[in-house]
Length: 349
Image (cartoon, rainbow, N blue to C red; front, side):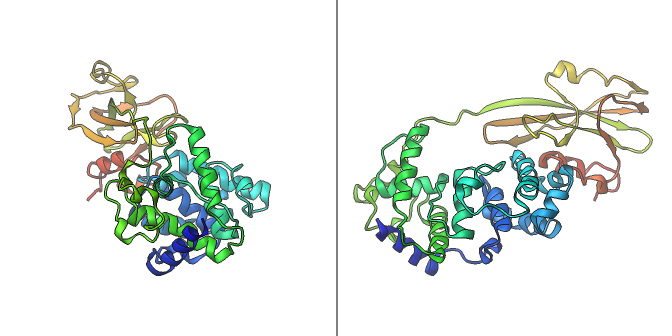
């Protein structure tokens, strides 16, 4: 169906997005970085992070040589922190195994940490002109409506079927510039036109080709039966503050799980544990139970209850550090704790 390919290319060049910083380059490093940041994150949020990241790490060599803690610090607030750790691992592999150059084919790109099939396809199409289709969540929606694809995309097998159909839409004669426009056009259609609940079919360049629109059922697609199960978790945060200088104790989270590798207060899992004073401390004052902080993640709601303990002396066991001033917040900190801390450290505004 080269008619669809051609329609998307024409539309993207006339009506698609063109002002994003990563669109002005075919440098694989910058395209890769933008693709990782854009996973489950809005463009408006990514823009500021992208500029800061590139200013500090202008190329893959600079990122590979950085300490992972600094990478997590610059990533703080973007969420899904495994992306940042994989970003760092990937940069090191590109430098160590590929002489600092990203592979040019999607199949080879997928062997790198954090690069899945759709991200690999985007890099290969944008930067090297490979005739391969992306299929992220938004594009699944666009193409399942175009084709009235009735397979259940909660099943991996059906996703593979749709991916093959997506690949069949790419004509064998497509040149590099067209592949870049088509790939960007699919993203733009999903973000700007073929929206989840209120698709703007009247301005879609593929309206005459769209089988879901012909059925007058665009929102019936994609078919996906498995629903996201959310749960609520209560975390009690043990905030130990030294009386003499107001410093608080932060320690790194485990390497797996929520906020893996980031610095947080010690996390307790029950109100009974939170009511117990910190061990290895002297001169303990009365606890202060602060207002809970609510934070939403993809699969759960976190209720964070800070319990502050003033102490005269404290020698915690295990890794961690005392943070005294707002300038010390050059740590990889979860966004809600960074906000909470800013108003409470000495020297904060």
